[in-house]
Length: 287
Picture (tube, rainbow, N blue to C red):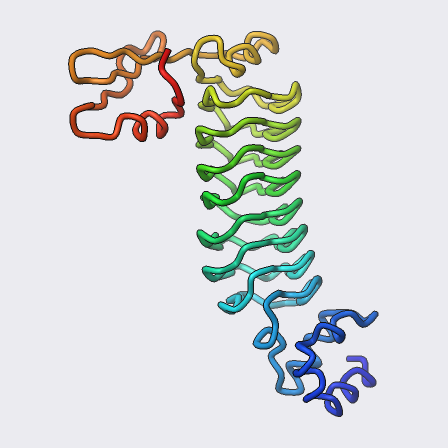
């Protein structure tokens, strides 16, 4: 512990609290030491702030953490390389998770994403042990390398507002076997699913207009898509196995058929919202 820092805090507790710690966390000091010095002085800095500063507890031995309800932003590298961290609880009201916030938290298995979350920045959860991810509806971009090298990750569901899956977002997720892309998704960037060797098939909605050439680098899923969609063109151009599906209207039933498989799903149109149900299947329009 830097002795001068502890002494400074003890002599200036009221001033620090009145200033809401903003100047204190601008000092050129090791932030985890600063955080510990505050805690040793009986001060919980997060009670007086609406954000968690960058590198707040990075490289410490914490095993779990509950983010207070007054926090709206988690700063860059706030929990970077907390190698013993297994569980994090995020509050409703959290809006922003900055880059590298939880990267290299190798044992992190459990985290909830609140409905208020709008941004998850680059590398935020890279090299963690998350197994199942449900992205909130408000998140519009899965930024580059966001979940890269999450070796235990098995399933991913994107929220309804997502537009872009960024470069390397799920690259080298060796255990990834199921991805639910949302209707409304527009772009899949290079290396988004690089080396996802267990991803056997993926449904790509016809809202996707751009799939960059290396999006599935060294990953060979069967691509399920509608005829003449961007995904269909991509599969043909880069020699991926693909399967088309189409919508057939018969009496009061909406039948979704896949080539060579016959009837896949039947929806009774007289008691469901047709558009909503088709969106769940990744279909945004009927030709």
